[in-house]
Image 1 (cartoon, rainbow, N blue to C red):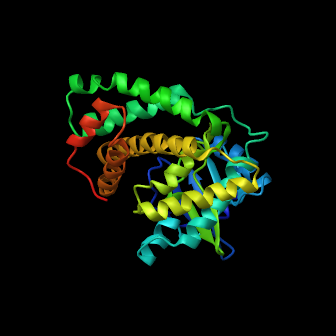
Image 2: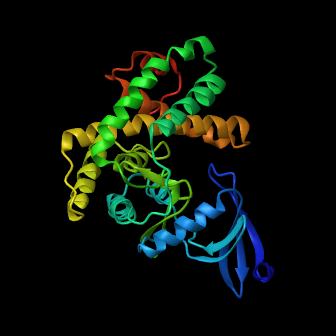
Amino acid sequence: MNEYRIYRIVQEIETGGSDRKFYRLVKNGKTYILIRGKHMPEYRTIQKHLARCGIAVPRLYVSYRNMAIVEDLGDHTLFKLTAKKGGIDLDHYRRVLKELVKLQVGCVRNLPLKRHYDADHIRWEQDYFREFFLGQFSRFKRRELTLLDRDFQILTRDVIFWTAPVAGYFMHRDFQSQNVIFKENRPMFIDFQSARIGPLTYDLASLLKDAYVSIDGIVEKSLLNYYLDELKYEGLCPEKKSFFKAYHLSGIQRNMQALGAFANLSLNKGKPRFRAYIPRAVFLLRSALQFSPYPQLRRIVDKLPHAQG
């Protein structure tokens, strides 16, 4: 397309776990971001929907097939801001949670996708974790990993049951500190192309049980209560005990998925830096399984040497 010819590439941007390519462009002294790769039709569809809902996402300027030029949000991710401060900034996280509630509740109406966080996807996350992290990375024998089948069946049933009261909302699906960028002091969201319809607790657990950032239990509880207060403004008052159970189970699923991703990225995708986040993810998963009714899963995770609080 002719629109691409008037932009000049000035930098290739190092990406997180995405297979897509990102470049910083310049046109008339202003910078933009070029995205190239898979799932661009989904990205464009969801971007337009979120923008119509008033959610802060990168503005879309030009799009064509597997490419798009979008607004340059800079690089002040929540992850980098937290690392720079040397700890959690409650104000930053509260702003993100406030916007998360708007995203989840305000964007589910007329959502232009039909994908759900259902039993098939839950099992996919479990198998991804088993294949890449337990099998390939941690080298457990296949015979031992087949013992997880029953625990995974029970876990799938439990996730569906406990998240049912808070299911049916917009789910970003990768809502962690590297996918939130602060621009002009406002949190903006990226990498939403894998969105689906699912429970409120999955994105919440992705943020507060984030392998990239260490959040202690007291701060986590404070932020959970803040999130529930924000839900009240949207007319939602889930029963706390069942909500926390759903949140806990969503955290187990999320950290298994993250460990599968870290292993796959470091071993198969040429991104060894993701090994650094494995100890924190193992710690989170092990802590969540401590008193769980999944004995084989707990036994295998307890064997893992990598753990860091």
